[in-house]
View (cartoon, rainbow, N blue to C red):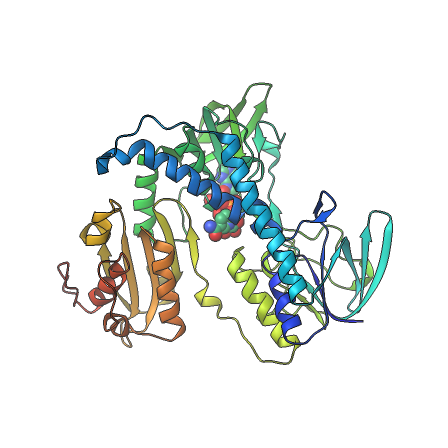
Length: 472
Ligand code: NAD
């Protein structure tokens, strides 16, 4: 009898399993994916998501830097060449290093790793199928951490040759001359950046008229301009109506403002969001079902409606982000162990790993206006940061939003160099309930790009030193 069976070994599942075992609970982690007779641990993030995409983002950034920016520094090199198979090999090596790292962590923490497909029979019984072998495991608690998969749309059926999803887009054997992408969300922008830097002529077709509606509106406007300048030809209000793939390429039909258009690409990436993954997970008898969007319903503590069955990560409400998933996994492990741990859902940061990066945490101005909260803002452009200028990365700005009355920081938004790390400093400050004044009184190393956060916090109360203060 286990104390906990965790189903899924992605950032939600393996983290929950490790924490549970650390807390003295007898824990198993079941994963159905395997490769070459070895369990494929780490879920989407490690195998076909965050990590391989970041490996390619880094490789392509270095190439684009050598091609376009070395000469700015007085470095002359002959035109760099791309070896895609070596780039992919490097990415694959990183993935296998990290996935075997997860196996090592589970082992070191005495989590039983079980390979097979799990089905929940009831809150105390999980059936595991591995090839022809079926086993029934007994447990006191179940944590569902089965993750998500790409949404497919009937107008652009994947053929895994010319029309691919985010997984296929990490495996191209050559740089497509022309690349279409459906969806200007996070995946569309990150993968579009990779292939555009490597030489593809990229066209993004986005159904909505708004670009990055979840981000600060000034940042969305600036990002749209910058990425169009970088060669990601982003077209808003474009609804794809049909696609046709042949041996060589894909033709895409779409409407824009009522006008029919057609474009042909060598490859097409469908990046229109992800959906929760629960295939064959719930036996009819178990009493648990999914909502109309396929999610498992949970409360703020990730409890399902069935006692002792919990669900965390992409398979439940909230942003589909690895760090949110891991924290939910930890919260649930702690709660099963009897500790009253809670998640601070307002402080889940978001990052788009383009260049420059886009990141934010907390509320944006629109959300605060809609909620009727009075606030003040302070911004600082990287064009006024000595370090940003020295590194030639002076696009973008940092914005701090604080409560008008109490000065408590309500949001931090950044577009620019190291935006993810700058916003992370905002997360730490907000976790401790900091005011803009607290950040303003904090010493920041000079010269760092983080000083832009310091100055933006000072600007909230009209005390910025390295830029004029707008009287409010
Ligand atoms: P997304 O929801 O971020 O963006 C999908 C976009 O596709 C939206 O803008 C949507 O309007 C558009 N769209 C939907 N249907 C369309 C259609 N028929 N035609 C044209 N456009 C259409 O989804 P994603 O980019 O696929 O990412 C999936 C999930 O993975 C997200 O939840 C994201 O947060 C997560 N993710 C996060 C990161 C990161 O944290 N850096 C990276 C990759 C993925």
